[in-house]
Length: 146
Length: 297
Ligand SMILES: Nc1ncnc2c1ncn2[C@@H]1O[C@H](COP(=O)(O)OP(=O)(O)OP(=O)(O)O)[C@@H](O)[C@H]1O
Ligand SMILES: [Mg+2]
Image (cartoon, rainbow over all chains, first blue to last red; front, top):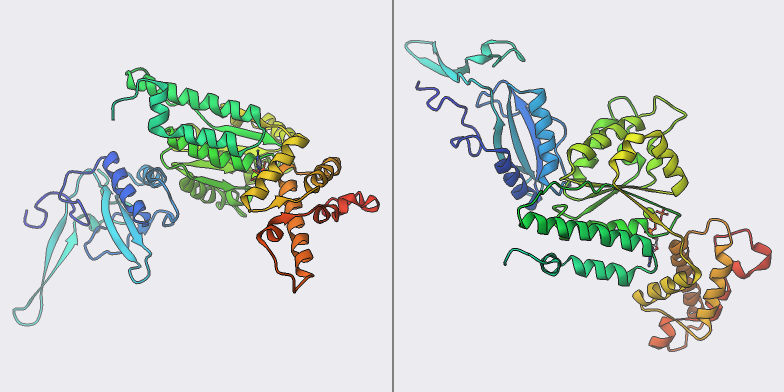
């Protein structure tokens, strides 16, 4: 299993660790809020590493004081998309930074088949390589359904 | 720090006593309100002690309604309440988010739920103060989006008791009508606090405290003038208790400034600058017999 050594998607922070519990997620959110970050919930069923922009679940949350607000939104996203990848991202609006500074997965499908290596023969004996998610073969919304 | 076993220890560790004393000192009158706040504080302290002894730790519901006439201190007390509940560990952050109907209710289908939820998310960890809550409910229009906001509120008040305290505020009679048409809301509110109108003497004390906070004081005869002012003003329409006092003092400061301004060459002492004289008050239109019906001066 060269392409999927851990059997799980490893993107963002903490992704080589066991899944964070809700209490641990809450602590991370608190940390971000103390730094003044705005949290947002995003989801996708196409976790290709080059798929930078996942779908937004509602607006980014500015001016929150407590993690419970973010957790409320996360729970509602989980119940809407139980078999999707869901991540929390923290945006730092400091002038000159203005970018995502934290990002980690908080929900994953039960089974993660991972990615296959696609070889394309071109001119001469040149090979081009790319990866393609096994689930991406199926239509959006139909993936990870088992 | 050892686990608290006495009321005094909990009070000392939480510093809630400071806020309670401050409340007593800085807010004039409001005896029934202060008593209820002490009761609530007592309940939370005893709950803490019970928890320390391993007894039940189910959090009580502390959603409240504040009813009273304009300017009786509802918003002011809500701010203190947030501090007290925070010190006693009932809410995690202690901030107050004050909103009215427009912040919760949307303009078109699908607008209300995200708006209400956004406000709720901001209030989590603290107190959500909904001023003039009865405007959420418009019985004349059954398609009104306010009902949607009420339903989301009720759901969160039930499921997120640990995360926020909701205070509904407004004038007594209208709140009563609101609760009658929304029994679910009434049943979620554990504490109904009624804010009485201030007596004349209390209003005068409030005036003196407000002046002192701004480094002003009454000159000779000015206190009596203000007392007379109050006696007249109370009987006029649109009297708004402590807020009317604040407004009257603001206008008195304006007149004091004009009076000093009229003498450009006079050297002004600290005394001159900080004294409200009796004429500054008696110039009010409240003393003008011809204009008794116009309360705004
Ligand atoms: N008990 C009090 N002692 C001293 N000052 C007070 C007291 N109650 C209210 N005030 C002052 O009166 C003003 C009005 O109070 P507040 O805004 O809390 O009234 P309110 O009941 O919320 O009025 P409304 O219903 O019109 O919103 C504030 O400036 C506040 O500082
Ligand atoms: Mg108010």
